[in-house]
Image (cartoon, rainbow, N blue to C red; front, side):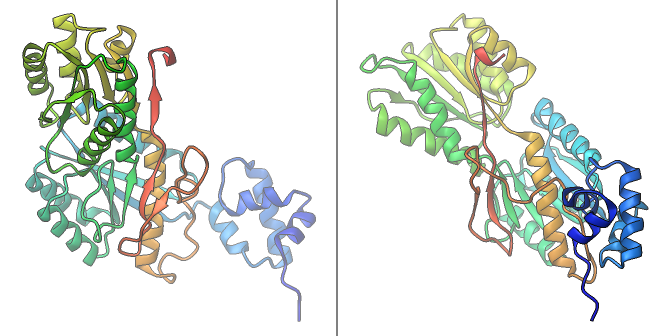
Length: 375
């Protein structure tokens, strides 16, 4: 029986390294086309088992994957950046043809989310969803699952046990980080009050951030007063008015953490009341407004979401989910999109936990901490 040709055999015959053959096999763009064609010709001559795959790579017959994104209209600066990063990451993917279709929910209500999902469903193979955790949303995700369209929760978890996976930062840790940074600026025993803003009671991510924040302060700084949580619907105007009222009612207010949207309203209120230095602010997402606020001493820390990394991981998760749904006969030899599927923590270890509908459960990526000195 003729011995099966190995990658090492092919590399030796073609006069290249095994790493080069591996890159050609996986469709990576770091190999010159002339080299890839030479490897293909040698592979054909030797009867290498993956020669048809190599030919497919070089002739452009790549697999197609269309992914839908449901984002929100309430924070246009952040979500337009998210869409742009997703489209750029899709264009940069060389292993397959990726297409990203984006729908914006008019608001965060379950009805608006379900409507956006219904608009996307006929056009896509998988969906990345930013939404509140509500029974109507869970029902819609369950219906998509039954139709073979996996849904990946982005930024804030939802429909646990139904969605394919959660992908984003560890929101409990985000809350703890925000609390620790505010507390460090206040000498122990000095007293004072801290305030929290959340977008709404149905945001699972905001709930976890609030929990992490409150648990840290209770444990480490019981001398500080935690005011009742403010609901701002992720809107700047409502946050601005509430922040002005808080500063008027609580002269001892020392810090504000905005768990979600509305950060521009807090920054505007501090600036107008000239309370920078007296009232510290922690905000999420590096935008032009938060960048200026960092430089002006209004914001002491920005906790930034790794949007590009989330988009790349989304492609990998969606590829695997669609492949599992389609079966090996329908999506044979589908190449990996966006690199390895498993996200990793800042320490390099796995960042996955718990199964969900055959998916990985939760995939955590490291948050970015941006200080004024980082600018």
